[in-house]
Structures are given as structure tokens and as C-alpha cells.
Length: 81
Figure (cartoon, rainbow, N blue to C red):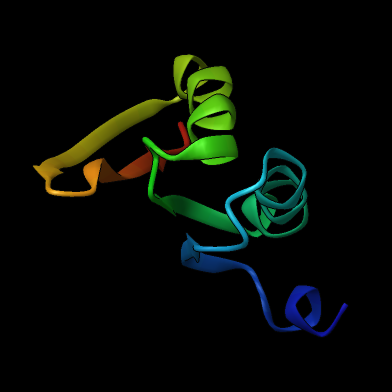
């Protein structure tokens, strides 16, 4: 609730517990308050599942690095204003 009182925000970075439920809850709670929303580890577990669901409905960019731990990355959604 405190975050809502201080918003809206230009940018939100979501880097939670990497479960689908956790990252979706963060997106639903904090995403509506920001113009740009970035997600950490878009190629990992539940984050990847949610990212595939929501990236189609917004302008977006992906920054992916194939490292020794597999492909990780940052996904950025830009809301149409």
C-alpha cells in the first residue's frame, strides 16, 4: 500500500523468487504503477512462463546472455501511453 501512495513510477524492476506465482503477484501488484517494467531472469523457471504470457501485449525488449548457467536475461515492457 505504501508503494501505491508514493507512485506512480517511471520504472519498476521485478526480481523476485522466480516462481510463476511470485513473479505474477509482483507484476500485478507493482506493474500497474510503472510506465516501464523490467524482469530479471526471463529464461528461468516461472519468470519465463509469465514473460511469454505478457510480452505479446506490450512493446518490449529482451537482453539475453547465454552463459555457463544457461540463458538468463532481462525483459523490458514499455506500456503504450
